[in-house]
Length: 437
Image (cartoon, rainbow, N blue to C red):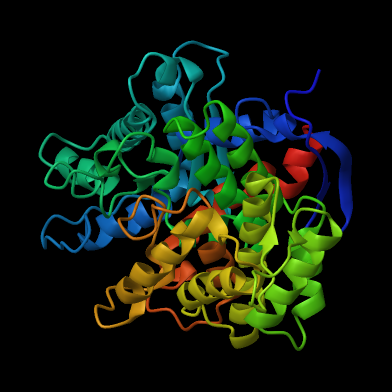
């Protein structure tokens, strides 16, 4: 028996029906095999930039901003990729034939190393993947080239970056999708601590696929932090379905209807019309002596999912028209402000998305101007408050950006597209999740 009465149809980023009559719980991070694989791969997989490590050693530019003249090492790491890869796999594996995996990209300049499940099972946190791969990479290079004790620390610095001077491995050859646990500012934020630009590159600048991947990360994070217990589980699953996975083709339909000549305001009109048509809301009577007829709903959770889907569609229409990511914060704000004035009902995440938007515009490009939207994540003090529905819009905006950001996706996250972006579940989550239902 289905846990919830909700049944959805899943569509792709071209408006094509992928799977119909899907029970809502079948997309849950706790149930759907593709979602679970995305999360498992995120925890267990490390990208190793061997080409970058080779260049760093050759010039002595090891770490984030450091260059130590006289400590250069001219090692043909990429030319010895077969031996290096075999050694890394040997050191990372727990036992022969386990589920350790290594994939090679870009002519051997990049490796994607998936550590065995046993390492994560025996660890308290996911950083066991990063540390074991960094150590294995260091030792593989040292052993392959017979690096002596006086230069081994240079090889280690190229693999680990500035760690342990810094908490993370800044400037090192090894990296994960998630940040280190010490950078997660509260309980359950690990999967939400993923910069927008990384999802943009992993999904190859596809706005809807990027939003879907980010929605998976964000909503899995909501489950992890205890925000999807009891009746709240349905609320979060509806958000994942309608905003993240284009349930019933709402996001696609809204963008298609408004994409050529529409505005944020016309997306508001289209969403209200769709919600009335789908009997999610209906217009009530005006107050005595008044003229405004507010809308009402018997399903606030479903209405919240509709407004969040509309917020994503409005972002794609507005930021897509200008090819600039910076408009995402104002779109998050004013789409929902207009929704509330139009209907008398709360906007996305019951007003919290608007709260995110106000602080976000200040921090990303206003008086403070500390950076562009692409470097924000769901763990950030500004963007964390909306329950998983702000970041998908930010990723979509950055995917549609044509180079206006100070920190571009290609400049900050290219390696993620070249590695994780080659895994189908990451690159095309809409199709993968529907197939796994």
